[in-house]
Length: 402
Image (tube, rainbow, N blue to C red; front, side, top):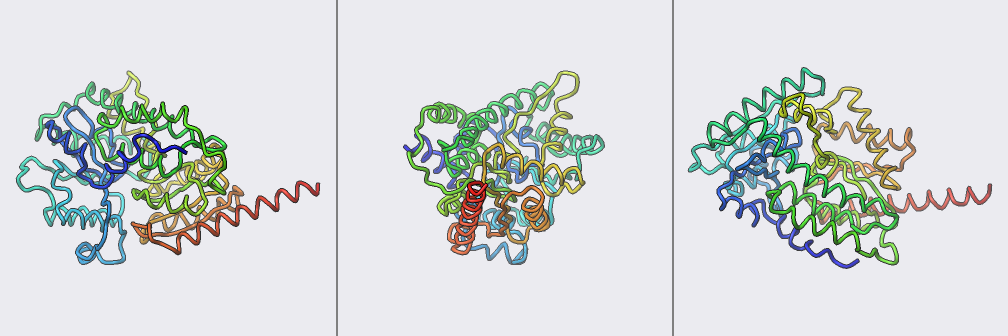
């Protein structure tokens, strides 16, 4: 297929946390608010005068210093962020909104604060460690609302003079929803028999919406959507199977590229930093305050394995199967970063259930934070693709016999 007009532009933005658009927004006087997790409602970090930056550590190499503080048996994502912070890579931030979701991220955020990775010249800088509930009932909604009011909105208003009113939140939701609509429409092209956008390209676009000021990427997203409406697919399919990728944090587009180079086109992304969840619209009504509705939305839509109530476990399984059906996938790849406590349990359970109860071919893998050079991972994906092809051949022969 012909290259997308703005793909290289978006790729360049992902090479550095403090990218060109972040610097542009900072030069305009806006506040850069860092965060790491879906459980920190992103939309509240995008009030007028602010923009959210979901933290990454692109081009990570050695993590020796972070390993000293956290040990080599902890999540590499958390260690990579700490290492980048110690290198001075996050001094552009004006606040850091962490979330108490797992022991590794807790320890990573604690070390960042204690070791002073923020710019000491920024006297109004504040740290937050949000206590996110483990379920989605109304008591949990009330708890999250109180946490966000006290730990995020109050310091934003008192330290920086940010408008945190109901009207301001509703305005931020409207801007958020525009990005969500664009990403959803772009993603719908992956449902085609021969999709006109690859998983790698889609992941690049989606990642950019997490790490850049949204208003500065929206126009190029609109142009990309229009471009895709007339983009011609390759006459001959370059993939041998379609897969849904489900699992933990993926902010490295090279992992998606590795999977696709192995013959499996990624048609849906149910992982942290993907479009499910995270790029679905937030619907607000007028009969309740916006903050409460935002809290309820995030708790009810999260597919994080930290939510271990039975109805949430079942929802994750059903949703993965629904994605495989809606996007015409041949299989599912369940992945986790090494040493991820929550996903190590979910991956073992779900990969068994999807294969045996939903009859969906499933590959289960664990991986390092940066996977681009993993020959073992490439071999496993190739073997999975071949197993899907063999299954299709056997099913065809069985139909012919009948």
